[in-house]
Length: 176
Image (cartoon, rainbow, N blue to C red):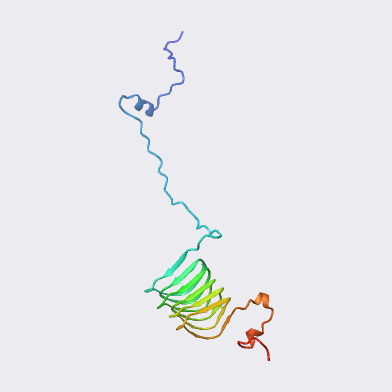
């Protein structure tokens, strides 16, 4: 015969937390684990075909020296010294000045460009525009009152033409 009385709960173990919960009116509160909140990383999506490209602006009171490369349109209203190589359009606003070589799909000059346009599908020289340098483009629009000092090559498709005489023999494009 046992000298102690067995309870019906054979697996009950009392812990300090269980003792606290047994007191009336006291609820269990456990500190929540604090996880640091980090901003989600979202890579910049590449522009989808047919979706308009974004435009970057250099404001009128800004002067920048360096290099511009990338996709998208660039509008310069201030001063920029360096090369511009974009897969998009370049617009030089009236009063703006760019010094350096340019490669873009379309170049619109209403300010001043001192440097060569090495490659462009279309160049538009507006009435207030001035270009000091050589130009190579698929097509060229020149407004009355605009200024240019340099050589211009436009309308030639070097891949189809096969005849490079126009490059070395002046405006006529024929060898003597």
